[in-house]
Image (cartoon, rainbow, N blue to C red):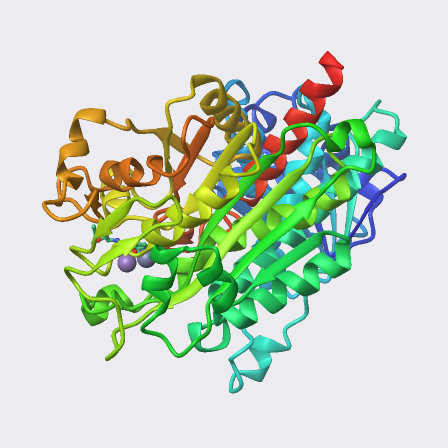
Length: 512
Ligand code: BES
Ligand code: MN
Ligand code: ZN
């Protein structure tokens, strides 16, 4: 999608659709709406407002209204998207509204759009939200559809002009915001593609090839380990999970190292993503219903890949590494068994009481490996437990970890990025559910507090390093079309990780 800032008044914009994001008061208070809108309304002799109000459009945060302009203004159609009450405004509300606008425009077969940016306190955030909302809202995954050619060849919205609020002069900095937001949107859509792709065509090898191509494109270092390397590294838990699949496992490390030698010496930030390309449950086989969506069990790795793709362009003033251990979890004659004891890279031994608790095993070894870089912080993202979906639903990630400062930074990043998370406790006294009679611990506890037990397990492998674990089993997938989302992969995590790195770069610059 191509974005640019328009010099002309929005009322004069020649586009298939002219989009106005509107607050509730914009329809009732004559002083409130953007002047361009008043002039469009005037050209329609007041029919625009009259129709909108007549159709029940009140500027509520989930409302959309379409008006055919019949040549009264150059744009063929005018679209209103509601932003709700001004007092409750957030950039995320605008992002969702922009997503609705692009979906509506696409249904109308529009190819070009002009958008009037609303008057809000933080214009940069608004520009970013509109661009991300358009980019994300235009996403569709139809690579395997061959029959409905009309649907597939439907025109795509590909040119978007942004109109700055009246009286605001265009600055160079606006272009930088635009370019960054576009990168974030594109990288998130790429992450969605990786997750939506069926497991048969998104194997550990293919996922690694994708990572390699991306690293080459944006200039990141990449190290790829095969089964032999994983064996040499004594990642016994990772190997145990990988054993039952004919697909070869891969250990991947992507690295951004700053050019400045002083910056390069700083303690890195490490991201770790879960990358089970298919989770059948192994011998603790999932029922069909529970297995159906398990191509998405690599969403954590897709999120860190998407984020690294953007971060490579941001040139942070400290190193950033992303790790994932990719494999399938399959039942087979040589699969790891219940009752087996696996020896982790750290030397801790684990009794397998459920082969469907595989994510924590792979993550444990990879987290321990990442921790060897003595990072300033580790953030892992994993579609780790169904229990976290039961606790927080389909839209909110569970955030675990005892470091309050790091939690605050991650949580602020999520808020600024428009991604939701909620802190859950790493309840130490629950640790006894992981006690084993034969080994140092077992890999699965009971049903009660299942997301917490999983976090307690991971905690064994990060030592004292500040660490946040995000259980993204819920928000990695959207159960329905909503705002800029379709049903399916959301790319959850890309935006918050990018924001985290942006904030940390600023913080380090401020103290340097
Ligand atoms: N990948 C699943 C978790 C999951 C479930 C993600 C549903 C997305 C949607 C994970 O590997 C798993 O199977 N977890 C088990 C753990 C249990 C066996 C301790 C679970 O949540 O049931
Ligand atoms: Mn599982
Ligand atoms: Zn899993």
